Length: 608
DNA sequence: TCCCCTTTGAAGACA
DNA sequence: TGTCTTCAAAGGGGA
Image 1 (cartoon, rainbow, N blue to C red):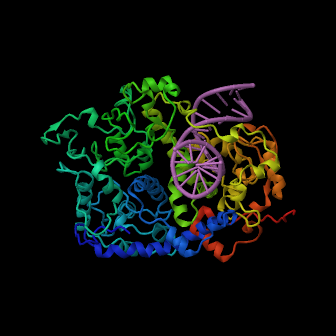
Image 2 (image 1 turned 45 degrees about the horizontal axis):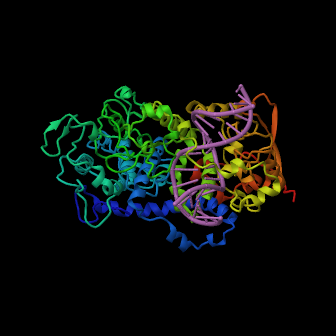
Image 3 (image 1 turned 90 degrees about the vertical axis):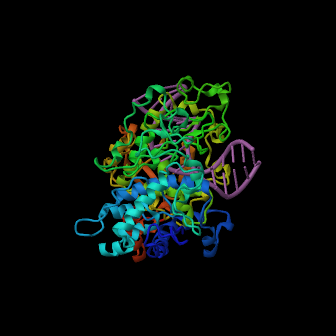
């Protein structure tokens, strides 16, 4: 657990009160989180053929990622933003993440965090919890759990920061994020010697991220010459290349994340060019970070280094250097790329950066939650992790999903603004075609043979996958609220369709449901997008006893009256067959949508 | 070393 | 317009 002042520093004060909180919270967190995680984990683990996966708790503890390498922290920070965003929007709905150390730049008036009555203002609490890892306490304990402490307790848990400590804290952050003319690559913060700073990701990269001699932009729009210290107009090459803009786009970009913009009048600290950079601003965005994006996408945006890296050397998530990600040479570069490429024309076309697709809602969710799932389980295979994530995704309420849809929409918007000429087609052919693309419609027998790592093995045949999606979540009882529809252009179809579904079965986008029989096991039953043949469906039907639930059509198939989608019996959670146990009910409370009480009471028997 | 696997969603291609 | 394909992330595992 990173601690700020464990090494004796007293800059922030109250350090002696901060230390144990995380441990306390971690225990609570473990208990609650493991409820769901273990379920998913057990589910997946039990389905894994690899028996070696079964490990003792001690092994699990050992395998749980501890402090990650810096590069991972870099990504973790990225995830943390999304996490924090969600938590902020959810009011602490989600538990504190496993990865501490999260740099937030915008401080909602930390110097005056107290309300008139002397209590800590909610914003300050939110900030302290979310933005300042040292002060972070498990969100579940503080804001979600019905047993959560009283506000007074919260204040206590928030370390009794007095006004001076907070002021010092804010100053600390300012000094940290906006070093002024630091002479060298030294970390421009007061960093205690013995502990990892909670902002370790930043510090870790600070040698690279914090360009010496770049003053805070909130202090001056100009750049101080690193040599002379004289303010001067920033040279394009020194400016943030994060989202390189085409010349025409420079300065014309409306804030793509204005929905996250904080209230006016709230002072924010913009990021200096060359200062702290989040790899993916849109992901990093939250209300406290929006001005960061504002500054990041300021007219200072210029072309990035040709290799697709930041001047800090950190690759932009959306720009992958050919050295990192192989791609064919210039042949596949679309004309738009040629015209709009942020990279100056080079003789070697293949060195053009690979602009990745913007992440969709699920990808954003996956990035955010993957670390949690991985931390909670011993599973290493992403395929299994993704299955869990996929189920959890479905288990999310529409409101929660809507956040990601909205975030993804902003991502796309931002991406389109930054890369006006970019097209998804530009990336076509840069990956080797998958085998399944050439695979003929597999017969049921073929499916079982096709791959020993097929998801059939991830999903248990006996033990119900008690993941929320297949058992609880929107698969059967999604509220079909239009929130997601409002948030995502893709969502409307689903919402529209699901509203017509008696059971509100959350279905894949209709383009994927090529057949009238749809297995809730999804691709686990062979219904891959590209191999969505009748055979795969029949494979599912043949391999899983199913019950048929009449559902409405969806999307483009809305004209089709009613479809009957067999649900593999093995996909039914016991809770669907019987009331949830007290333990389960506790889990329901702890995990919100992941464990909602089941309105359905399906009684069926496997047709062995 | 490269590809597969797995998930969902977005976007492009194609009929 | 509807259907299909590709790619986005992630990392263990297999060839």
